Image (cartoon, rainbow, N blue to C red; front, side):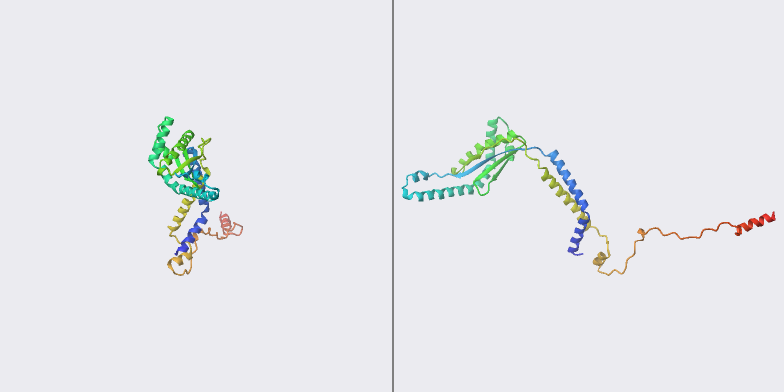
Length: 280
């Protein structure tokens, strides 16, 4: 049997067992809901946004303010070009600074400063695993989201990052790129969503995949011949005839047998009775 025939056979088997696919999908939805409600913990998030900007040691603005009126337009154009170059440089360097923020050295500094301020004893891994850094595309802005199972802890870590991140950027790369806080951290008022629709959908997809895999494997490993066409394709010989399945036939009809004649006056039995009476 060629590949196209196998594919067709599998598709037909899947269509015939569509009820099985639906049942497994519903089971997956129920398992996803059960897992989410019993094994997923509530989390709280706080995030802070930063703006990165390049710093030039030469202050061109003072020279521009004293420039003659005839050259002020050229000087203003130079300032705009210079600011654009600084912004492009900051955007280009941002991925490097993000990697610095993910180092254990920086995480240790943040953890020590937080523990000292809060009089706590958090580990470096706890702080590091709670952070997620994201670059805003086509901008020099990046944000850090802090997610933990405690709203107060998430807020305290985000507040500490408001101080630690700009300080780190001033001390890195000869202080050529700085960062300023654009959106300060806000304490989460409620827990984040547990994601019931997403996890139930994932459960349904897994259920359908499992059911489809079962149907496909059963179809591929089924070597029984179910039709004369499959027999001809497999052995390349013509089918001359087929034997009907007598096991499915109904019971044979009962033959009509003549009923015995009633004992009347002219029957042999009556004649024997009469003969016995005459003898007596």
